[in-house]
Amino acid sequence: MGTRIQAALSRAGQWGAIALGASIPFSVALDNVLLAVVAACWLAGGAWRETWDMLRANAVAICGLLLFGTLALGVLHVDLRSSEAARFLAKYSDLLFIPLFAVLLRNADQRRRALLAFSGSLLAVLLLSYWIAAGLPSGPPLLGTPDNPVVLKRYLTHGILMAYGAFLFARLALDAASGRARAAWALASMASGANALMVQGRTGYIVLAALALYLGYAWLRWRGLAGTAAALAATVAVLAIIPGPFQERFALAGADSRSLAAQQARTSNAQRLEMYAVTVEIIRDHPWLGVGTGGFPAAYAQKKPSGSVVAQSRNPHNEYLLMAAQTGLAGLALLVALFWTQWQIAPRLATPLEADLSRALVLAVAIGCLFNSLLLDHTEGLLYAWLTGVLCGGLKGPVMGNGKWEMENRAR
Image (cartoon, rainbow, N blue to C red; front, side):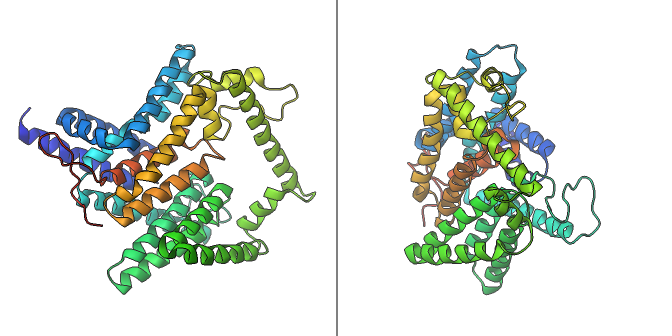
């Protein structure tokens, strides 16, 4: 294939990867089209050597591939005729794209465009959410209502997107070159944080708090952490007494009244505790190899106690438990190693901004995985893989040229 054609395919793959930043908060269908474009352009573009060289210097991408490989081997433990095995493995296939995104977006300008595309998409979601919250005319395909103003994603996903958006915009404000830009990004950050508290997802509240604490530490170290912690405590105290979604979810977490909402909360908490307990039993019975990728629903149905408050569960709403149940302790160790490695190598990324965004992503996903199977979910799983790949495109390493890898932006 001619050099010109390969260069054109490489550019098409780069723009497909950049466009994903705008697509992820909005459209599953467009996500899948763009993923197909990225994969096809990478395969036909011939960037095999560059990808291999990048992999040798990128422990995060290696961990992601090893985790997917473990899940692929886990398919052998279940009935290969089962649609669950293929469905579960396909949902984790986003991990394969981490090195592709990294090699396609290794240029600093490309990564900047990708982050701006993502930022613009989050701002569009934010504006639509406030439109819905204001009670202005809306309807399909918009999903939300004034008391739960999600846009095109469920409230769990919306809350996580807005919480991460609040961190992203705050971090962009700190790096802004002008006072006007700094004020605009700061306003967007505050609006995103407030919006995350307007929807019903408690996971979004926890992620927002964690990212706020990390932002305070990244900005002013221990003084910033202490100041942010005090501000968070005051905010929670105020919001807990103001009628709204936060107050309702805060009360539901305790479930300490006799209201119908509290009874529903106790039922929900009991369901989660039962799912966790049954999953732990599954892991105890299959600690080394697990029950296989996609084998959890069948294993849960066999273990489910009589009189269960859970009709049937396809996942335990905890990614760590789900990974251990499917692939054994080795899979769980690889998942933890993936997050830990990404945290550790963050200082080697091209800029302090990218380092902070990478660690914030680890915090958001690692915390979210305690309460949900985030990597199994399309938007959260793809966002993690895409943003990891984008940021790892700036990983400092050996020189690229004659088969070696060099990152283009070494200045911090």
